Length: 310
Image 1 (cartoon, rainbow, N blue to C red):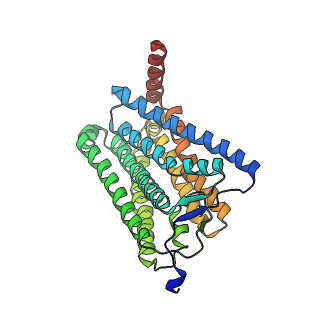
Image 2 (cartoon, one colour):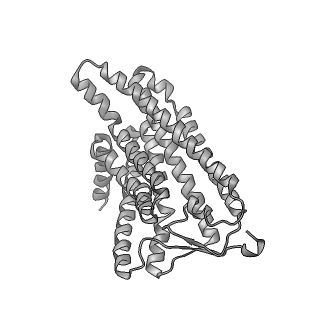
Image 3 (cartoon, rainbow, N blue to C red):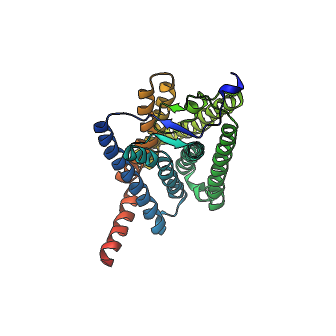
């Protein structure tokens, strides 16, 4: 394309879900409710874990980080969408779009690594219970989380810097409710080869390495559980990883839905993205608390203290 047709874009337009004012009102209430539930649910998990010394274990340390990442993950997209609906504006500044993309990648990649680390934690707990405290020591736990944060921040920074060098044509309309990386790349007039190479390399890496780690961990876990002679012992061992397995299935299932819907209609893509970016972080606290006696007990202590203070 000729240089004259390229320009430095000042803002993008996010089409969102609907142009109808009645539907937008319903969407506003729906997404506001889901956002509040997500934030409160995950903050309660963090509060329960941090306030109860009995929950200061590797599993809950990783869960605390996952809850924090989920709150931030949802907060990168939903508040801006709510503001756009309320103000009847679809615009997002160029800098705002790059910033949103950066933090979305940070916390999305972070979720992937944390789920893998948590699978490894369950593998050690069930397959090597006698060596669990030695293997999953505080230094290793801290290092695993630190490496996850460093990798997420580094990739997101590189991808954002590569995006900032692109020029865009006169079409600045994004058929989505947030600045989705692949959608923004299609609007660029300049060469996006490096961006796409990095994008597909990371998708391949995040799709293969963490998922392979999770699959390996649970293959060994199932093998160990099947060797337990008593039915009660099998149930007790499986119950320790059932919540994590549910979250992994939900996360990768919705993530796969986003990938498969990328070539279909924009509406289907947005629905899949909502499941991935909003519904999954909202359900995680319920999955981890409904069948977890430790979390329930810690939450009861927190609410008990607040009632005593009143």
